[in-house]
Amino acid sequence: MERVLLVGANLNDGEDYRTSLEELGALAKACDMEVAGSICQTLETVHKAFYIGTGKVEEVKNLALECDADVIIFDNSLSPMQLRNLQERLEKPILDRSALILEIFADRARSREAKLQVETARLQYMLPRLVGLHAALSRQGGTSGALSNRGAGEKKLELDRRVLERRLTELRRELKEVSGERETQRKRRAKSGVPRVALVGYTNAGKSTLLNAMLDLYGGEEGEGTEKEKHVFEKDMLFATLDTTVRRIEPEGHHAFLLSDTVGFIHKLPHHLVDAFRSTLEEAKEADLLIQVVDYSDPHYREQIAVTNRTLKELDTAGIPMLYVYNKADLVSQDALPRHFGAEENRIEGLPVVAKTSGGSDGDVIYLSAKKRIGMGELLALIEEKLAGGYVECSLLIPYADGRAVSYLNENAVVYETEYAEEGVRMRVNCKKADYGYYEKYLER
Ligand SMILES: Nc1nc2c(ncn2[C@@H]2O[C@H](COP(=O)(O)OP(=O)(O)OP(=O)(O)O)[C@@H](O)[C@H]2O)c(=O)[nH]1
Ligand SMILES: [Mg+2]
Image (tube, rainbow, N blue to C red; front, side, top):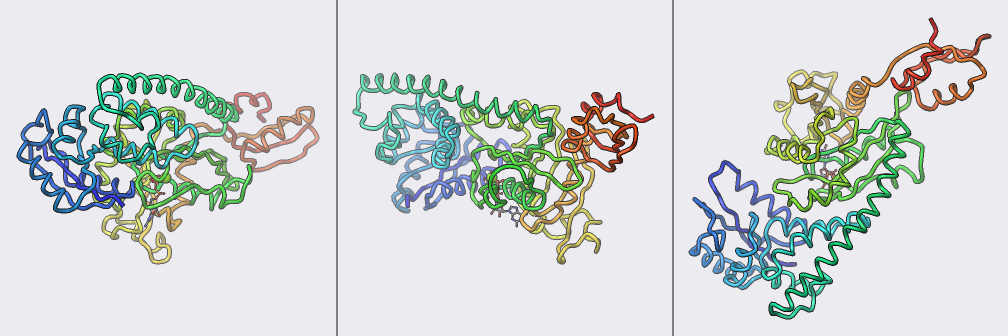
C-alpha cells in the first residue's frame, strides 16, 4: 500500500481547511493509500512557483523522508508550473486533490459510459500538465495507455500531446454515441408518464442505502431479477456509486414512480468531472422531484448541503422541487431532532424517530434512518404529497366500447372503486392531470 503525505493550506478565506484535509485523507483511503502524515501552512497569498512558501517546501521534503511517504498529495489545485516545480524539488510523485479524485473515479468506473467520462476528464486534466505529470504517472507502470513508454524531450512531449488530443476527440465521439442510447432510454421513460424522483447529495450520505430501502419495502414486480439483484452497491467509502441507476418503486395502493441513484458530490469536485458527468446527471435534471440526502450525523452537514446545492445549480436544476432527507438520524442524539419526534408514538424500537417538519423556503425536511428502515413510510407519503400536484381524483363512467380506457386506468392510476353498470364501467380513480384531460369526456356529473 502506498504511503501518502497530505499537504494543506490555510488561506484565511473562511474555508475550514482542517476538515478539508481530513476529507483528503478519506479520499486517499478510498484510493487504497495509507496516510503517513499531514502538514499545513497558513498562507497570506499563494506562492506562484510552489504554491506553499519555499521554506515550507524543505519542511515537506524532510517530513516526507521522516514518515517514509511514497506520494505527496496537495489539498489545493496546483498549476502545471507548481506541479512541475514541486516534483523537481520534492523528488516524489505529487498529486493534487483533483488528480486524486480522478484516480478514484478511474478505479471505480464500471459501465462503458462512466469509463469514457472518467477517461475524458483525466485527459483534460493531463493535457496542460504533461511535463509535471511525467513522474507522478510513471509510478503507475504504464496503466495510462497513451502516457506510458515516454521518453523525455520536447519532441516526444509534442507527440504525446497530439496522441492525447486525438484520443480526446475519439472519446467525445464515443461518448456521444453512448449518451444517445441513454437519451433513448430516458425518452421511453418520459413517455411512460411515470413521475421521476432523483436522489442527490454529498458522497457517502446514504443515497444508495435509501434506494435499497425503498426497493425492499416498495419495490415493483417489473423487470428481471430478485430484490437482491436489483439492489445497488452501498458502502462506507467515498464515491461508492458512479453510475446512475433507475428503479421502479410501486407501493401498493399508491402511484408508482421511478427512483434514481446518482453519483455523489464533494467539496472542490474537479470541473472536468462535473462536465464529464453531465449526461449521467441528466437524470437529476429531468426529475419531477429531487430528494437531497444529507448525512445528518456529520457535523459538517450544512457545508455539504451548500456544496451540493452549488453543484446542482451548475447542472441547471433550478425550479425542480426539492425534499431534504436528513439521514442517519439513528446516529444523532435525541436533542438534535425536532422535539416532538421524541414522542412515544414516533419511536420505533426505542429509537428517537422521525417524521417531517415542513421546512422553510427551501423545501421540506424529513428525519429518518435509511439503514434501519425507519421513517420510510413517512418519506413515501411526503413524496406522494410533493408529486400530487400532478394528480386529480375523479369519478368516470366509461362506455364498454372503450375497454382500452379501463385497462389503461387500471395500469396507470390508483383505482378506488370499479362498478360494472348498465351504461358502462363506473370508476373512481386518482389519475395524472394529463390523463384527466383526456378522459374528462367520461366525467360523471
Ligand atoms: N447509521 C447509519 N448509517 C447509514 C445510514 N444510511 C447509510 N448509512 C451508511 O453510510 C454509508 C454510505 O452509504 P451509501 O448508501 O453507500 O452512501 P451514498 O450516498 O450512496 O454514497 P456514494 O455512492 O459514495 O456517493 C454506508 O456504510 C451505509 O451503511 C443510516 O441511516 N444510518
Ligand atoms: Mg451510492
